[in-house]
Length: 328
Ligand SMILES: C[S@@+](CC[C@H](N)C(=O)[O-])C[C@H]1O[C@@H](n2cnc3c(N)ncnc32)[C@H](O)[C@@H]1O
Image (cartoon, rainbow, N blue to C red; front, side, top):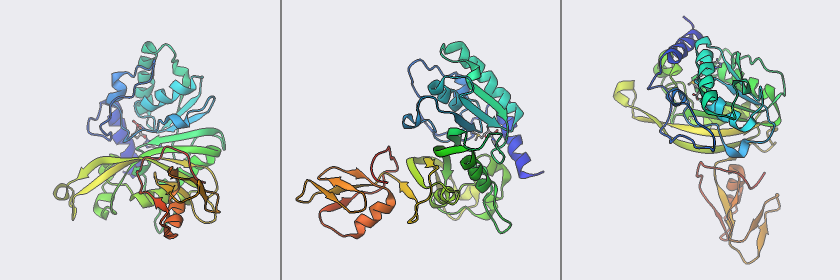
C-alpha cells in the first residue's frame, strides 16, 4: 500500500469515529461574538495550533483552506468572510468532506449569520489544488504539511510540491498561514519511515529551521512566527530514540513576496531599542528607532544591529510571538 493511501485510511477512520489522540494542543475554545462552535467540531479538532489570526482578516478576501478536517477552522474563516464560496475547503478524503459538511449543517442551526454555502468543500489534493492561479488572498493549512515527504535524491517531495501549489494559487502579497509540529533535532529514519506515526503528525516533522527554509525555497520572501509551544513528547524508550524529544507546534504566516537579495525577512518577535542622546536613530538602511521604544525587527536586521556592538542599542531575543509592525 502506498503512503498516500495510508494517510487517506488514517483520516477516513478519524472522520468516521473521533480520534481522541490525533493532533491538537491544549487550548481554550475561541470566543467570538455570535459564534457558537458545535462540540463535534472541537472533538474533531485535528489541528496543532490555529491558523485564525485577526490581523489576517480583511473584508472580501477569498480564503483557501487545505485539509478541512471536521470543519472548525473553515467555520471560523467563514465567520469573517460571510459570503457564499468565501472559503474554499479542499480535502481528498470523502468521509472527511462528508463529516465537515455534516458539522457545518449543525453549525448553521446554531449560528444565525452562517449558511453552509459560505464554505465550498471540494474534492482535491494539496499536491494538485483544484484552484486557479493567483486567485486567493489567504491560504491556510493546519497540521497537514508535516506529514508530507520532503525532497530527496530523487527530486522534490510532497512538501515542496504542496508549498509550490500554495504559492501558485495565492495572489501577489497573499499570505499562507500554517500550523505544524517541528522537532528540535532531525528524527531518525526508523521514525520518519513509520507511515502510521507520520500520518498521525508525530514523526514526519522537520526542525524549525528546515521548516522555515522550505517556505523560503518555495519563494516566500517574508515569514512571521506567531506562536511556538509544546506539542508532544516522544519518549526515548517508547519511540526508540537516543533522547526524549519534545516536539513543538508552531504557527507561521508566509507572504507571497519576492525573497530579498540579502535573504528572507523572518520575524520571530525580536526588537531593537535605541537609548542614545538623540530623539531617534536612523541606521541608514530604512530603520528609524525612536529613543527608548522597542522597534520590531526581522532576524536579519536584528543580527546586523547586534553586530554593530553599540552600547546605545539593545537587541532583544525572539519571543516567537510576533504580532506585526516594524522593519522591512
Ligand atoms: C491532521 S488533519 C487536520 C485537519 C484540520 N486542518 C484541523 O485543523 O482540524 C489533516 C487533514 O488533511 C486531510 N488530508 C490528508 N491528505 C491530504 C492531501 N494530500 N491534501 C489535502 N488534504 C489532505 C485529511 O483528510 C485531514 O482532513
